[in-house]
Length: 237
Image 1 (tube, rainbow, N blue to C red):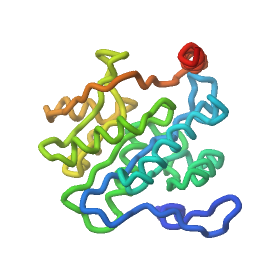
Image 2 (image 1 turned 60 degrees about the vertical axis):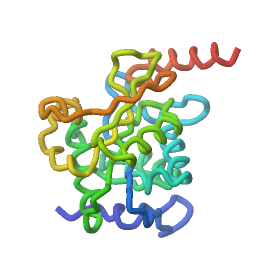
Image 3 (image 1 turned 45 degrees about the horizontal axis):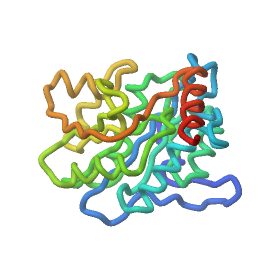
Image 4 (image 1 turned 90 degrees about the vertical axis):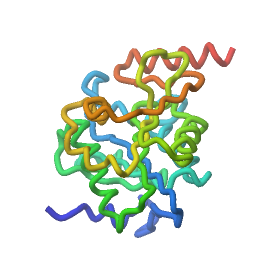
């Protein structure tokens, strides 16, 4: 099957054929990858477009990643979405990200990640120091300082996997998850909705975990969205 043309050239709703840059000349390249092909069944549908602080949940994630790109931390963001999900595609373009239509409507998280990694890996010759930063689309409290901490740790050398541990959510595996290019080939081993973590664990790949303040909860249900909204209101008083 031919690759989606949106990977090579995208179109803004109001600006025809304007290219969305993905790469900069940097010997240490980090690509953000956002899997956004889920249907949000537990939420009741259209979860990523649900509003929080007057912005879609996915919009909060892409806004932070836009800040990371402006700061020179990442070279660009790829958003993998369902082929029929025009709203998510357009939202990705609004935030100057690259939308990538998955081949299937009902792909699992493992498939979505694997497809995104394959397409990023296909963009020209490999560099010794490439990495992906996997950011979940339903975590609107993603922070720029955490992104910077993870990338700085990877660039310092000596680690191929880096993830945060949020002090307000002890024991929970934190995101984003940074994966060095040397491990991308193991993406074929991912299964179901578990992502990369079980592969890392089964292969006993060392993970550098960095303690950071706060939390970064998933929004899986409408109740989760109400909870973070209530917590935000408490924090403002």
